[in-house]
Image (tube, one colour):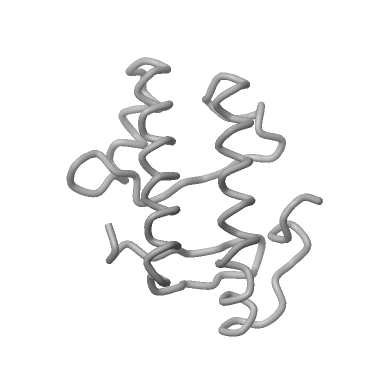
Length: 114
């Protein structure tokens, strides 16, 4: 999992980030595992098959697209809200500062909800 890294995108802003420290790697691995488990619980439809194509070996998603608002995605409302909470926590705690240092100021959409 440590080699997966992250790409933050919003509009024209695209910032690929190499894996961070152990805490960030652990937080991202937990987030990816949680999202994969929630997706599997929603059933195997065409959307799940399409998403599975973007998974790394072991069923861990390489791409995690977080819609706004959270209820606009394929997850049940509780799982969507928890996924959003986890994404914003990782973004606020480690990713955003590294992205802005590497790629310049991030757009408002990538700033964690306050």
